[in-house]
Structures are given as structure tokens and as C-alpha cells.
Length: 164
Image (tube, rainbow, N blue to C red; front, side, top):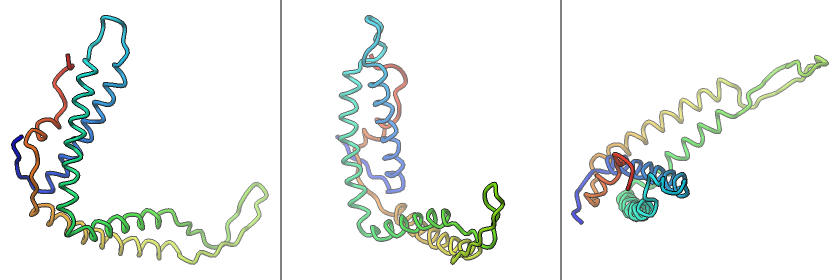
């Protein structure tokens, strides 16, 4: 197994391709395990062995990425929390004032503690922080390298045709 060095940015893209390839293998195994006798388009046992091997390589890749990310782990967690905050703010009900509800036409008076402009300002503030954190991560990911199995770079690509 020859190793090659790639930056974290490329490693993260590779991880996503490997995860996608595993999903493809899962689908092929599930769909083609039982077929009309004599009409087996795929060698499901081989696909299964390929899947196990690829999953093992993915574990190694994830471990290498995780180890390399230790210096910026706090930034990664901050980024995730900022994104969660923006999502939550997007769900905040900002209804305020008299609202006619139901068939009776009765008016209900609402009092929002955070009004729509308040939410919009806070979202813009948090989005600016997301951009700052993402820029920091992008710089780190481009300058930080890890070693990966060179075969994994080729194995992540989908097969050209059926596995026979």
C-alpha cells in the first residue's frame, strides 16, 4: 500500500466520494442479491467484499482527518453551533400585533419579544461569524496535509460497469 500526501480540503472531498461510493455499493447489494436464476448481473459477494474493504479505508481516512483537525476542533464546533443558531432563528415566530384568526374573525393580540428586524440582524451577525470561521477552516484545510492510501483515490470512483 503506497501512501500519498494530500491536503485536508482534498481529503474531505475524498471522504465524501468514498461515502457516496459506499452508498452505491449498498444499493447494488440490496437490489441485486436476489434475482431471477441465471440472471445475476452483479457478483454481490464481490461487491460485499469491496464494500467491507472500502469501509475499512474510510475509517482510516476519517481517523486521519480527525487527528489533523485537532488544532481547529474548537473552530469546527463553533461553526456547527453558529449554523444551528441560524437554523433555529429561522424558525422563531415573530408574529406581533392584532391577527384575525379562524372562521369567527376573532382578533388575537400577539407580542413578540424578538421582532422580525431583530431576528434578521442577529442572523446577519451570526452569518458574518460563520464566514469568518469558515475562512479560518478553509485556510487550515488547504495548508494541512495528511497521508492516505493512494489506492483509495482511485477506489472512490464508481465502477465502469457491472461487477461480474
